[in-house]
Image 1 (cartoon, helix red, strand yellow):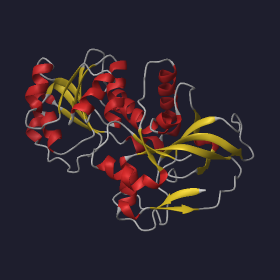
Image 2 (cartoon, helix red, strand yellow):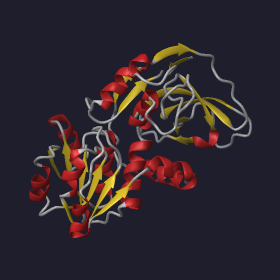
Image 3 (cartoon, helix red, strand yellow):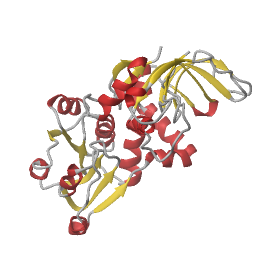
Length: 324
């Protein structure tokens, strides 16, 4: 099998594709033929050596995949060869095959393609965990989604609408704003820190109740100023690079709150709850409530380019590797 390998953390362009032996299946494990691997911000952090967890090189990046079961180990129940499944694996996803514990796989609804499934778990789980568990969005509230044309942004729009919110999406380009509208945003606006406060207040009758922020930097400070009384800002990530220096007086004013959203750590330490959350989301897809968009596809040997384009915010929505 072929797999993307990081032999020395640092530069994305140093990733190579190696030929490796197919793994042997052990007790309680399944072997997947990977069709698609989602490309995420955290994957780039691993490769560049900027994540808090430092895997021993060489390693294969890639934290979520979708494919079909090729082989089953002993003591595996409820699964069969040929089942279409998705997996959150942390590492190892950028590969033609993946060996994983059977308990980690989740069957894919027929309506969900493998590329969309490979990009589903992190974005939609983050969105639902942030909106329902961390900032407690209620029906009728108003939500500003920063980076509304990105993977988390598009998912947050759909989930917020499902929860009964009115949504304004802020995105940097017209194609990204168009994608936000297709995902259900009621209004869109340019993601420009110099104009964001006034644009949101005008469009949302004085401001919003919740901000979903995977962007960071100057956009965080501008978005904080759009919050109404008792507004909540959910800090999800820093896709723009800089981490904002937040003026504490803007938090004090109007009784605002800032809430951290680290879905990854929560999911690792609350496995049963995460599985219920993911099953709920997949049921909403099956029922036609959520409509994950198809990702921009790259070849397996274009992993470095895919990660670079993601970091530089050149793509609309999600990114995936064709591993078939």
